Length: 418
Image (tube, rainbow, N blue to C red):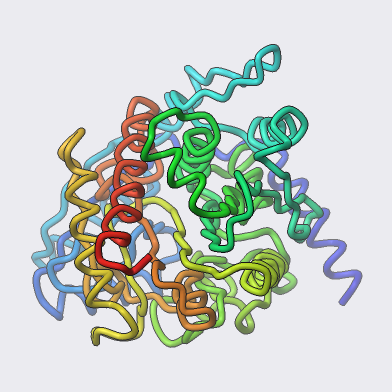
């Protein structure tokens, strides 16, 4: 077994020595209009390993995002036509979009230690900025490392505290390797909470102790930078021929009930059990330590894409815990989000408004520690760009998401939830 794993590791290095390209791979937005459409698309996802379902089929009327390689386009389009399923090609060549994401990348200025929110950030830039904050703003910022990934990278975040606060908020992102947006959004949040002089932002910064973890999956994230842009999972070998687990479905909350795969080769493979992966084990353990030292009042998870605010719990359509309060807070907050750029979000449980996938971090934290505020943001967009989201949408996403985040705190205080 050891020899096989060694050979697998060597093979992985050889295979990924060159960066995977996606020339003429097309992004489709598919619309199942009845249960038969849904059944066909689910069967297609399970049987066809060449098609990449960025957003899997979940509900009638809910769009599906599918990427097809050039050799499969004609067959895929014909199969949809044969079943009278409406679809639209929204990107004819996703490689051009990926090239554009990197073309104008502006590196972190190490002279003045600034980050830029006009491009996607790297792990070195994020962690380097955190180190700078810890050294030069130590009265407010503390760098925390909760553990190491499978490949030995630190899972690092920061703690922001302006006094002797007793209530804590945890913000977490970067579970999906291909998601370059959510880590950048969370560094924007950190920058605002640390440096903004706006009275409402400063009050939020002072009222709570903040823990911010932008890169839950540093191995997968780095792998998408170096080798395979569409990699989703972490990088732990799961068999002699497969690598990785979808960390967004590996938490101990109705693990494996719905929305994930038990096949190690699948992009949405949930692992052998809850917390089977070092990344989710370390982060969940550290959240437990936070909950022992403070009153944990909030947990917000961020990833792309979908434009949803998902409330616990994914396995249910019933209003559990303080769902009725949070649905009101969430809708008002998403109203605040829409003001700047008219971006529209839907709010509800994952089963109601998304894919019903269980095993999420927000669901686990809500059940385990019962913070009054817990939710998962699915950021821009709604399948027209997906993981190819252009860089000119990064700053607007940061701004509107932060607007809604402040609105959550404001509305929660007004309704005595916080």
